[in-house]
Length: 357
Image (tube, rainbow, N blue to C red; front, side):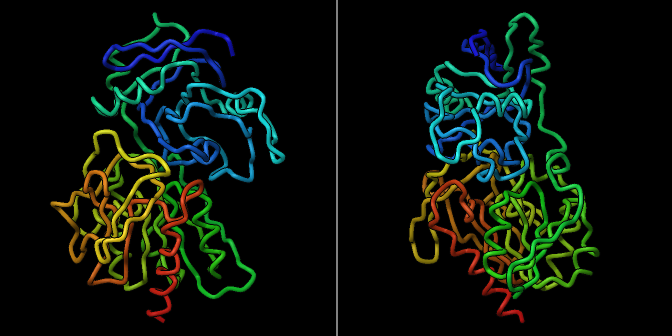
């Protein structure tokens, strides 16, 4: 963990630090998360596919690696940048060091740089590409500048259908996996849902043939508009009358399926301290978020009204549909790690299912 390494941004700025994790070089979209806890959940969140993630909280790795806290089978991100990495973790659940975990997972890391300065650059100039390397001379700047996150959902979705059963089945829910965090499954099972997780490539006919009581649209990575096939299938599913609840990418895909538009944010919302406002009662909730795109408030989907807005920048954080039994949110009500303020939305989904029965 003492080898000199660099982050080279597409604008030519260079940050010098030390390498940790896997060896090699990697190019990705550099983003930051303001979460103060939950680095394991961040590392294993499929929504970070194709990105180099910067932690703004300075000390990372202090409680080691705890597999029970993972949100997927392993990291999907390209690289990981921290101010200080702890090499002597202390926690009764700890099963290893962060450095060893990154090596095993093939994730290239960089520590010892000024993450505050890097974050300010991204906030001022917007998300940009970068390359982590130990050799400044091997960098092809044209390649770095042209990098795009592609085929994101296809790269992280489950390869096959599987079923999770509660102790007592009350409802049958299809979880359409676009890069789902495991805690979405846990929250549904906790409420008596038999959850059938299906790949992103599943057709509307296949989903409807399961005759589910409800359909859950998961979070996931990448540009939502890239998923033309999924959007077409979702349009058919949305017309079925089956209750639908969408989170993050699922929220964006639903909007696109119903005629809305999405846009890329300057630097996105990533962290466990994002304030959202319920437009029905003016109540503020603290939420966990991880997204670089948003539904355009000037091009909302057919039959949809904005239900939540971001208290910082006024962007769309939720849509309730008036013509179909569906609602979606841009934030994570399963919030693991993060605040539990909006966990009640899973109960609203169950109530939607009950109302339809």
